[in-house]
Image 1 (cartoon, rainbow, N blue to C red):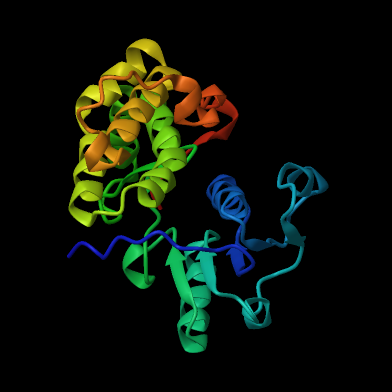
Image 2: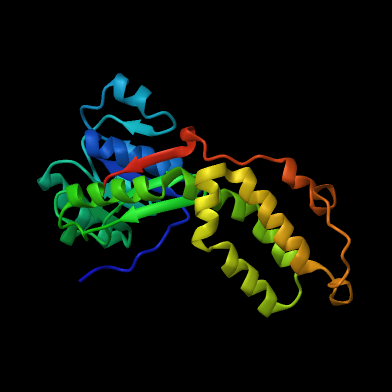
Length: 246
C-alpha cells in the first residue's frame, strides 16, 4: 500500500546515514542540502569520501547502536545484514528509518526527486522500482523543469503581497488560483520569469484597488506597483538537484 507523502523540515535535526557507498553518499548529500546535521558511518570511509561530503560528519568505524543517539531519522545504506540491524535499532529507539536494501523493513522510502528553487518534483513507486521512479521524474522535469521553478520562485515572492493587499478572502483565493493557471507557465517558458512577474503585479494592482476607484481610467504605472518588479528571479542551475528513490 502506498505511504503518506510528506516534506520533512530537517534544519538543525540529526540524520544518520550508515554506509557511504554511492547510495549512502547521495542520501547524505541530500539530507545536508535540506539543512540536517548529517553523521555518516562507514568503517572504510576514506579521506576522499569525507572531502566529497562537505559538511557531513564522517565516522570511519563499524556501525554500533550508539551511533543513532540523538538521531531524528536514519538511512541504512550498507550491506543487507547491517541494514537489518540499523532498522531494528532505529525502531527500538523510535527513530524514523529507511532501508536501501529492504524498503518494507523501514518506515519510509525516499522518492526520486528534482529540486529547483522552491519547487520540488517527486516520484515514488513505493520502492518497487527506483529506476522507473527516476525515469518518470526525468520526464516530468523535461515537461516542467526550469520554467516551473521560475514560476514558483515568482509566486513565492508575490504571494505575501497578495495576502497583505487583498483583504477580501474570496478575492484573494480567486487571484491566487488564477496565478496557478497554465498560461503563466507558458509565459514563463517563452519570455522568462520577469515577464510573469510584471504581468502578475499588474493583476495584483487591479485586484487591490479600492472599489470606488475601479472605474478610474488612469493607468497604473509599473513604478507605482512595487519596486520588486525590478528584481529578476531565475531558476538557477546551481540550486537544482536530482535524487533517486530508495
